[in-house]
Length: 283
Image 1: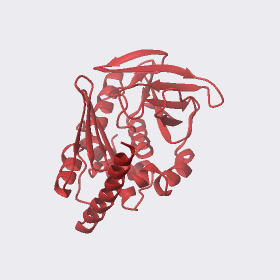
Image 2: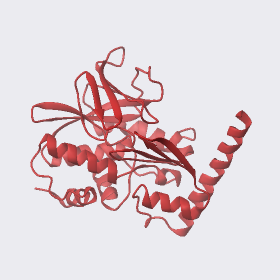
Image 3: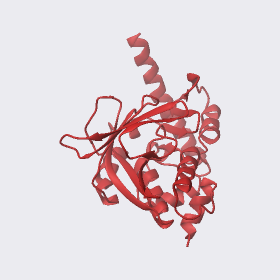
Image 4: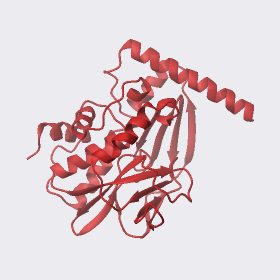
C-alpha cells in the first residue's frame, strides 16, 4: 500500500503507480528522479539546513524542492523500500581525481536487488548515471556517456568504484558494507554548516537527462551535452537566475520570500565577483 508521503513523492516523479518491483520499474523511477528532483543547496545557502530524515526529504520533494545526496538517495531508498524493493545504503565518497580510491564519507550510494540482479543506484549526484548500472565489474554505456564499475580494494574496501569522465564528479567510491541513515548524520552537519564546505560557499544545482547534464554554479549555467560538448551562460540578472532555477532545474520557488530571494542573489553575486577576480588574476 502506498502511503500519503509516497503518493506525493511519486506524483513529483510523474509515476503515480510504478507497479510491482521489477528492473524495468526501477529504471523508470531513477530516470524520473534525476530528471525531476534536482540536486540543490538553496536552503543551505540561506542558512536553514534541512535535516536528512527520509520522511522530511520526501515531503520536500513532493512540494517541489530538491537536496543533495543524503536527502536524495536517503528518500529514494525509503521510497523503494515502501514499494517492496531490497535496498542497501552505503557510505561513499565522490572525487574529481580519476585515480581516487578512498571513501571519505561525503556521499551515500545505493544498491538494489531486483529480478535476481544487483544494481548500483544513485539519484544523489546530479551528474551521475541516468539509469541504474549492474553492480558487476565492466564498462557500460548510457547514450553518449560511458561508465566503468570496478571492485574497490585498499583500506576502505571491500567496495566498488564507478568512474565516468562525463561530469564534474567523475569518481564515486563506496563500501560494500550496508549503512544506516545515522551513519551520515555527522557528515551532513559538517557539509551543511562548516564555513569551508562547498555546500556553504557555493550555490550548486544539477539535473540529469538522457542527453546530458545541467549545472548551475553560482551565476554560471553550464550545459554538458554528451554529443555536442559543453556550453556556458553567465546569468547577469536576478530574473535570469531565478528563471533558470525554476525552468531548467524544476525547483519550485514558492518557499522563498522576497527577502530570501534578495539575500540569495546578493550572496551568489558576491561569490561570483570573487570568482571573476580570481580568474582574471590567474589569466
